[in-house]
Structure formats: structure tokens, C-alpha cells
Length: 105
Image 1 (tube, rainbow, N blue to C red):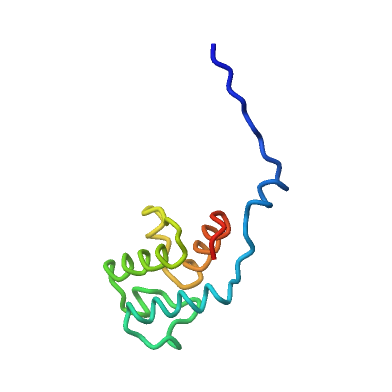
Image 2 (spheres, rainbow, N blue to C red):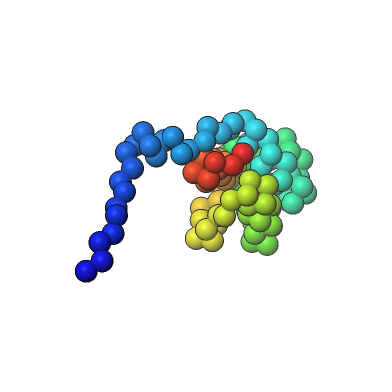
């Protein structure tokens, strides 16, 4: 029988590994990415604006945005998260979580 060492991290230890992220900076960057790819004025991209219904985006644009965010923040967004990325708020929330977990900004 092989014994394995199991380490359980406390909440404090887990918190220590996360990085505080600047939401305003993330919002500004993501708005810029969306505006460029969707070819819309950045002022039209409100936190609750729906990408398909309000901004006229299609699935290819969504994939481009996903790739641009991954590249910008050096993170990997699981493909199953793509259907949840329907508004700026949702994208910011997901990006903030992944950036803080990975310690990149």
C-alpha cells in the first residue's frame, strides 16, 4: 500500500494564494476588447447590455472575445463557460474569478 500525503489548505491559506484584482481596470479592458471585436462604440457597452440581443454579436465574436481575454490576462476560460458569457457583468465576474485564482492581472 502506497501512502500519500494529503494537504488540506485552510480558508486563510487559500485566500493567501488569490490576488486582489482591480475591477475597474478589468471592466475598462474588457469593454475595449468587446468594442473592438463587435465594432460598437464603447459607450454602448453597458454592464447589463446583452451581447447578442443588444450588441448584435454572434458566436464567432464571442469566441474572439474569449480568446482575447485569455491572452490579455493569461488565463484559460473553460469552453463550458461560454454560454454564460452573455453580458459585460457576467464576463467581468468570470474574468475576476479566474484572474484572482491564477494570480495574474
